[in-house]
Image (cartoon, rainbow, N blue to C red; front, side, top):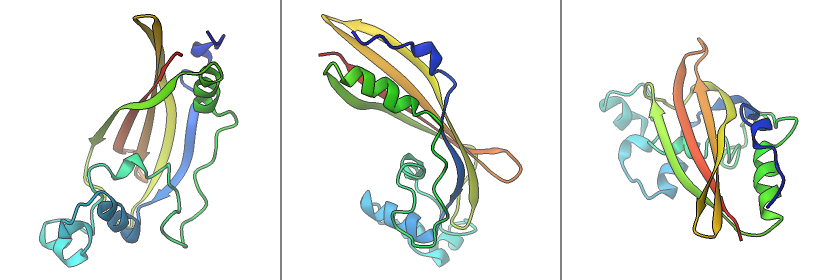
Length: 168
């Protein structure tokens, strides 16, 4: 088994920077997940539904930090990469000995609606790493938390994902 000091990575940054929520990006994401609800594509429909602008769909923040600038040319620079990549170090170290990695879980906590035009501050970190035996295999769980906050520093969306490595 890979000799990785998991405790060393808990609390380590995975991302930091400013995320601009753009209407074209929100609409393209909704289309990519086959959500044809007009509020994600039309500002007038969104306003009629009580939003200030086109809202981000419920799972939009799965990719907001990961697919930075894919859809719009006027995106600012992507969030800064951390000095050390804890996800790459842990999962890459485990994969060096084989096995499988999968995205095991994803949860979103919306503290309020997010609409196009907002600029949010992203801070990502490793919340936890733990292992569980399953038969003759070891499952390693890496919990990543991304918090998107407004200009006042108030959390707007908290996204938590769980990556799982199953040993070979």
